[in-house]
Length: 403
Image 1: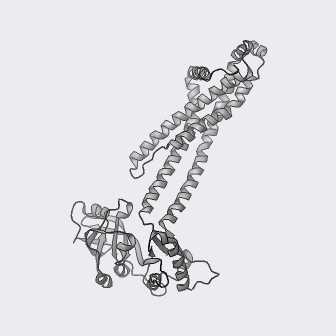
Image 2 (image 1 turned 120 degrees about the vertical axis):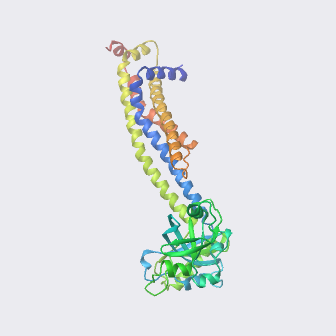
Image 3 (image 1 turned 135 degrees about the horizontal axis):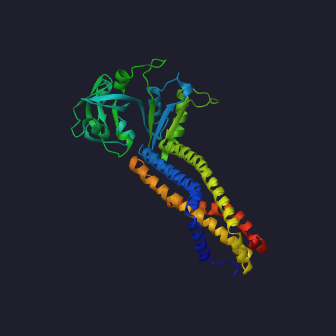
């Protein structure tokens, strides 16, 4: 047979590697670091992407958000624009168009203080955001018109501020304004459960009383709800047309506003994360190149050390292919063992990250392991070919005379 059986070559390779453990470990170090970095970065990128996706999916597939771009500060969002978007005759695919304000404020209850996102909204808040009240009630239209100091809170806010106490009827202080808690929102299991919702008019008069250049109360965003999930694209098209008409944007001019959905955010962030993961993976791959060079270097040293052995094997009938395959097997085995150790370290790193950051479970996927094994074998083959070919090209007579 031209080639020595694979198992025999593997046995010889293991004997050679174990014969000088320290040198073998130092040679594999670059591969170990490279594989650990690549696998851990891929797993971390997938975990971050999954976390972001789950968070934004909770925002609602049929919910569209309207905000302004940086060049539109002199033409703010207005209540009249929201009314135009909610007009069935102009935008039949839109069910609701709710103006909102938003801000993060210091919220105090007794001795407990927390920084919480406060949203000013209308009585349509529950319908627009597909939420419900788990206890208490929603504020009424009369309370909205009277700028009443009432608030509904998320379950996380209730737990952080009140712990096990019943929040209904309690007074909380947002900035220097006291609000009475009248309701607690349902539990969505996401990060959007730590919030406070107050009447829009109350937010505009008591929390942020600033006015635009036109004298209108500040509106940060308009939340647009499509009639159903199948009409989201139609709602975006109709909203774009209405907004351009209401804001008197010339047909040749660009939009000075943005319409985005949860899907838009997820796609954009996923692309960014994937690009960043690939970039970091390339940087980690430099360690693999360094490790591969180390494998080539040590294999060249091994060829010199075993010149007489090579000459002896050739003298007793070993063919060129046998020698190439033997030394190539040693290079692959060395790289593969480095890869396996790297995978084990990556798994340990993922478990550590998961333990330290409970909201970010990092799991090493089977595809990442398969990729790491493939890279390890490829490194062994690529950087082992030259030393193996050099060993096979030795003249048996010269090799036997080598001291």
